[in-house]
Image (cartoon, rainbow, N blue to C red; front, side):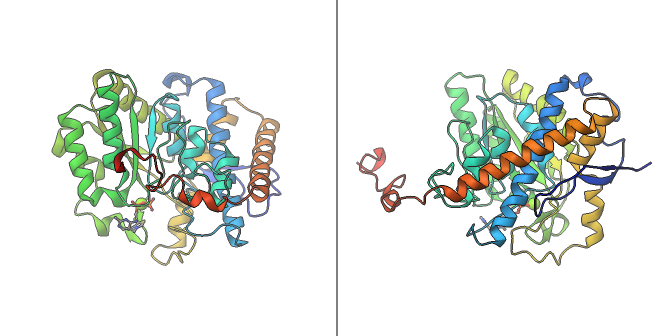
Length: 362
Ligand SMILES: Cc1ncc(C[n+]2csc(CCOP(=O)(O)OP(=O)(O)O)c2C)c(N)n1
Ligand SMILES: [Mg+2]
């Protein structure tokens, strides 16, 4: 039976209530977090991380409306369990590469809200020195290798990173995220073939949010069961509920362990949903309000919140404190972004192929 769970006060303009009619069976239905190796602290940290991503993006949407952010802005709201469950399944020294819907993934990797927000504002203090924007986050320090705007462009790069890991004899893995739209690209198939042939430590993660821009998966793919693409290459694969952070953690962990120990790659199709448009200019005429509402009822943050209260991991007061600290962190990030300087003119000529010491043009 559906039950109501509502987060208390939230006075951040544009911030949504973490509230929904959630099915208590969604998270922790058949196992507890301890059964899958998560500590109480880790679960609380997962919740905070998901909330941080949501509040970050709500603040970004507001700043975009105020024209403080230019260019494109693709929001991740609704998909937070994917980035979070995956991050908890890997080590900090593993690699992550993604498409352009990258804010949540970068925050999950540990890139600061300040550096992420400043990047959106085009400031020099941003994680790509203000020159990448929403689609091109990057942090070498956090082994986050972008942020890629070309649909599918990151798939062969992630495969190459896995090759480098193996060549160097390291025990790391590379998570290679992509949208459902990328699955129809040729490089997807070339990469999977190579990864399986060469036994590369890569885990391909399709974030199937049901749409590539305004095109539904069923209209773009001859067979909509995307995980099964792996069968052509004899690659292990799984379909995972992306609205349930425990399921994401469990599925990614299993694939990561296999990649790390046995150098066997995997393809995971994580079924998720974006509540907002493809980008800020999307009128959303290709789907019904009812469809969006149905997914909101399975909201990953509301469900984890419900679970934590149920099993006594937090009290209402604890949740309020988490909300307060996340809100403070985001407010600080916005203030930091606003007060940071724009990149000086000379940086136009930095980090591009015109650098005099660029090794391949000598
Ligand atoms: C090679 C290429 N073709 C087309 C585009 C235009 N484009 C930008 S996003 C997008 C849809 C991709 O959808 P999906 O992979 O499902 O990612 P999502 O936006 O759902 O996260 C398209 C076609 C592009 N960026 N690159
Ligand atoms: Mg998509």
